[in-house]
Length: 253
Image (cartoon, rainbow, N blue to C red):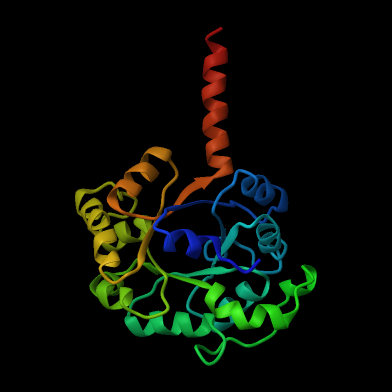
């Protein structure tokens, strides 16, 4: 029950493939989980809701053996604690600029003595899990992802990747493009070159590199570049693409 699917598969040298939920919808989350994703991305950074609205989704993930990854709004111990207390086993912290900020992300996600997370997980109640079973393995189960998006993050990438307790270092293409002066155009050569070099730099410190795209072609290319934590969009994105393609074929009748 406490085996983090992301950490386990990455530890075995395999890639992990995930999808995100575009809204706080239990049914969309369940349908996505049923596609056998390795992780489900729940975004609290750019969406208008908080932990209360998505409170059942990490439990749906745990019931299916899927990792639930919550991206919190920022480096805040309260958001990180709430994300983990509702059942997420993986937490992503955006806009990490320095090694010290990466160390704080780890500290906020771990119980003492490794960190400073307060003790009162809520999800255990709904899954009939005893704290005596969960708490001793919670730190080992929890996966910490730090996101590189800013000029400072780019400059300090190697120091950030070297921080103990960080499991995945994530490249945010959209924000990196903005940082590099080409907002809205991550396809620009200088952004693409940074993204191509990113996995090797991260792997040199024993960590896995992560990224997100909406198409399977981009996801495949990322895997070939060395990324191993890859988000492939949403059920809605792929459903829209499939419906459009189907309608085009039908209109040819």
